[in-house]
Image 1 (cartoon, rainbow, N blue to C red):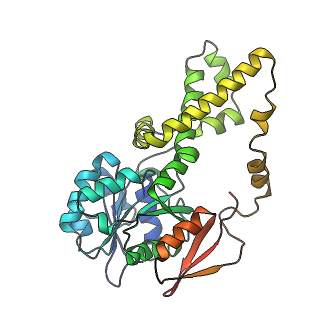
Image 2: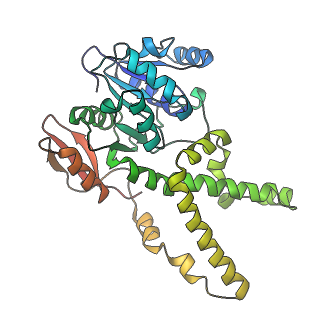
Image 3: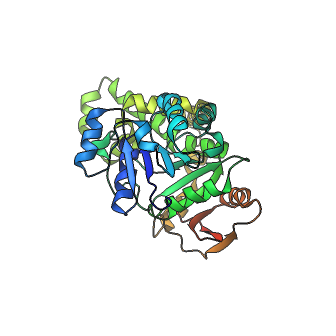
Length: 331
């Protein structure tokens, strides 16, 4: 959480930035926010948030700055943060791709102050009007670090996420995060878009849409996201999305070949049986029931957290002397 008398600054009030600002405000955290859009700033003020007219005023006294702007705006926003935020302010973000964000903030001179973050939550909607105080409450986050991370800055981000946000955290490298996000977020967006495209171009389009029920709805939900936002997200993580999609295509080609030759499709439909079974055993989403362990805040504890989280534990809390970790709950 922020130091006494120093706010958390949220720069960008779209779906995620707006939801974070609402949640922190509801939890009693001193928050000041801003957005490039005057209409969005006005809407945020009507919602009861403290809103600055520009980035400079938003970050001027901040203890922690959260960048919630599109990546295309990051160079200009990061430069303003570098010019106007206190040198002591930690910089984080909420983007779904981490490597490119680190490159942009480093180019602005903020690399030593940056700890990446990505809340694993969202909807197909966008903009401040779609934001909600409950969207980021008690969700899983990824927090990313490099070898040069300042441990005190990592502590600040972990305290915010596990404290007022009530979340759990996987501490990872940018590369591991971006590869994993490609598999569980970006590729699903591409596949959902293709499912929608297939129906949109079919000669029986109207009949198919009239018959569509749960499987089509669930399979295409994220395809109703703003396509420009989805395109940006996917292309920003192209290095990991492209090879993952190639595997999807290869697997589908094998299914097609089996269907056309009356071959076996058993392996395709049973490969993920262990994942399926784990999902059926899930009883309390997002809540770990395993024993809590203490990772003392001594030595190279950030690197130790990365190793532990890569094997399946999550951060559930932080004290003045230790990070609390527990087995990751089933999803």
